[in-house]
Image (cartoon, rainbow, N blue to C red; front, side, top):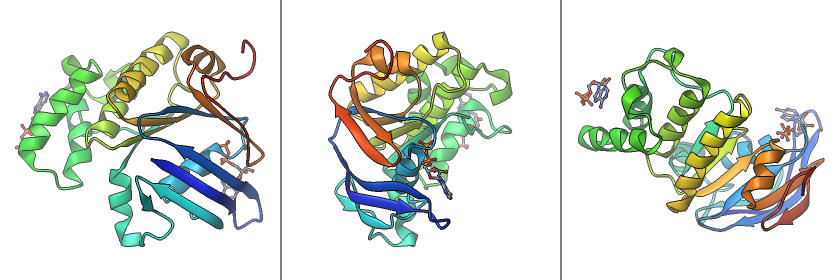
Length: 228
Ligand code: ADP
Ligand code: ADP
């Protein structure tokens, strides 16, 4: 589903963010991407979203070589990936319902399908009661669940979560992990960048660790730091 073949990335200031990274994530996997700040996690995510281009190497997403995809087809790639960010990135002037519906409107989904799918995903993340609330009326965990609903409403095969629990207390973080696990259980491939050692150690999923732009560990049922 996601494949990096000898990918290197050098930013304009000659910072080598990634060196010869190869990885292969199969459909339906749940993978933690771990490593200290500056290790290269966000760069991997930006390359997948085509916000940055690799200096060398090849990136395959859902059987498509995205390094060869022309700019006008970028929206098509982004439909294949749902993204959840640490800071939620919800539209403050739209309700919960509208935030999720908007993700479908901008890609031209038929209104009938929008009316059917939005309530369905809101119920999946247990937010049906909050459909008419605005983001600032929600708790952090609820906001993150809205952003998860928005990320999956178009049924992308891949869900990327960049530090999704970074702004949440531990209990709320587990709520988010339950939601991500459930989505993964329905067949979505999940790649989650995180520093949250407790979560990684408890989930016993595949762990890819990156350090100074190189993959230093790739383990099934791995851990991270103290308590392995
Ligand atoms: P992480 O997400 O693991 O914290 P990043 O991928 O953000 O790591 O960063 C990897 C390296 O690339 C760091 O040295 C960082 O300073 C550098 N870097 C990240 N983004 C840019 C950019 N836009 N321009 C220049 N250097 C960058
Ligand atoms: P239209 O397709 O004409 O926009 P919709 O039924 O999709 O009609 O929605 C109209 C408005 O009603 C939306 O902007 C949304 O805010 C609100 N709305 C629709 N369904 C719900 C719902 N289940 N919960 C809360 N608000 C809703």
